[in-house]
Image (cartoon, rainbow, N blue to C red; front, top):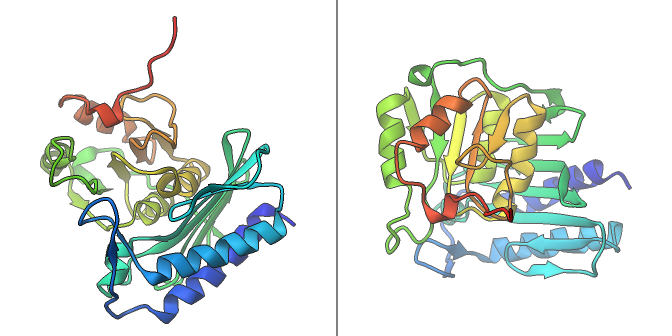
Length: 270
């Protein structure tokens, strides 16, 4: 089975399940912090996705938000967020998404971000471009930070950690036309790919927040990196994504502030 076609179909099936609970408040369980929630729909959607992936790709591993890593070692790994934007969903806010990506030898080859409440399915295959509902998409052509609409988010430990993105948020608010906080990193990245946002940055993300959306941005003609401009590592969690034209300006803005440990590039052996 074609991995991209499978990811699209599975994401839409999971999205249909989430749509059953859309638009009303849900009881949520706290995980690592008061801002890190899980609902029954996160778990149900993940169970559905894992069952479909295991049936279609029995030799692949799966890294999923709620259940962790499963499967035997192989050259391919699926990275799954069954419900990115759980807080929004739990409060009846229709800004959430299913995110599914597949890595081969550590490189993300396909990615899908499906936002059921918005009726949007973003998809990309490495080297083949990015689409929204089947139509090609491209990043914006904005080339001045003062005219840019950016997006970001804040880590779940922001109550207790000084590395909380607050100073960076203020810095970009002073420089950009606007900064939005949507509550779903996967959807933020997809909207950079579509040209709605001109750029996005965030720290302390997880691989399932980033994998599919980062590929969408690259395949739509944009740029993704770590906070110092180094190659993006989805397991490190610090991301800058842009239309490419604004990337240097975004990195320069981040460089005006101390680099958080979560955004430190990996130390390379001499």
